[in-house]
Image 1 (tube, rainbow, N blue to C red):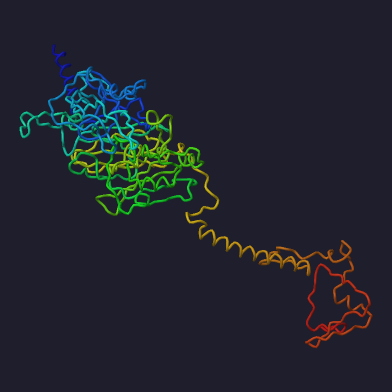
Image 2: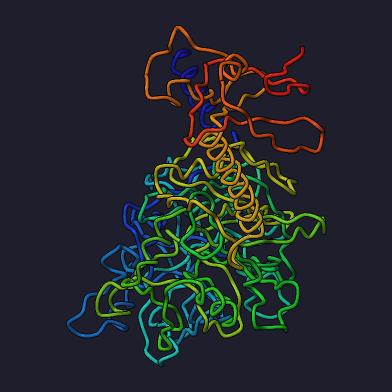
Length: 594
């Protein structure tokens, strides 16, 4: 009996440790990729008594799910319901949830960047598990009375007036600052009858399942190179954050992750040759729009697919790449017949976003998204056939936000207690394992890894060959022109010097030496006569002239000496020995006196 009680006590101790150990809790990522506007990675949660639902992650306050009635209310007869195919429908009739007595209505849609039409959502609550275990033993990742809204017929309306169904709902992380649950008063001013609905991070924290009301996420990418998603509550994977970290306050009324101070957007080439006439071009954010000023503040919205930017900004980027604007959809379609299309989307060409540091005006943080990740695909029901598109939404109704297209390559996290969210560059496909780190309850910044971002892409993009003579965006560079000028002068000088040597050599047989080292030898003696061998009776020039018997003709000189030539009616060719003697100044024909 004593042993039995001891065993029970040991089990109770283990359970208590499990309840308060505070280790970060991981969200589960679905095997399904979502979206005829992606594809995108998505998480999977377990609701009620074991119903798995695929959903996007990341908003604040209540979580939005597609209800059992959704497909029947939005699907066209004869066409499949996309959300049902990917497991994004929550069937409340098979769950354990209920409708709380809440009169405050929710809107039909969970974001403002696109027009959502339909009836208001239905307030709901159920049990949620981050993991797959929905048993009563699974408590560390379990939240009861979870705050939900069910969408019954919401559709998105595009600029052409066409309406399209939603592809999935959106999971909430929690709320700030330091909010554990969402409270609804049944009667205004009467707290006693208020109804509470639980929020995810706050409730996990109060249950001692995690050490802080925090989360860290990198959604990764589904194509063309698979980068699996990462979402932790109470911590983050440090290897999903590289370079510098940016900390941004969540502004009151704390409804969205607002206030990201975007300073500029540029197109850059990381390595290799450039598919553009230049290697870098900035100033794209405010191009053609003086009202933007030196920055715009926008939201970070993982529930939205696009880069929701001013049309002038989208047009400035589009002017540098082979895309065409689709007015009906408000986005840009890649011109796949252009030879530049594949060169851009396969090379290390990036769209770089520069953010100001609100705590240090001398510092900025860059987050780069390769064009490989901005070559996304539209599919039915948005278009008739798969169509590559560039996800800049020029019809965002003045609501500027960076969605999943940006977050494929950005780490995103928050401390909901201190109302601060974090952003940094995320790595490419070459992930360096996991480094799960607990976030402190009072943290106001995060540490990044020492991993190199460009290296994380090695082997997954194709650098273009570098040109032999690189040029700037303005044409031939000054260095190139100067080099050509100097080269021409040097070349002409060498040609003139070579011509002088050849003439000297042909006329006088003289070679040339440098510092006593012969570079070109004198002509051999045989060159000057008919014989090819040297005669044993070779005479010096003095001896030769002394043997001549003919009278000499004297030529006057300025020095009073005379050089005498033999008086003969024929030319006499003088033998020249291999050694040539220099004639003294006082030489006077036959009257030589040393």
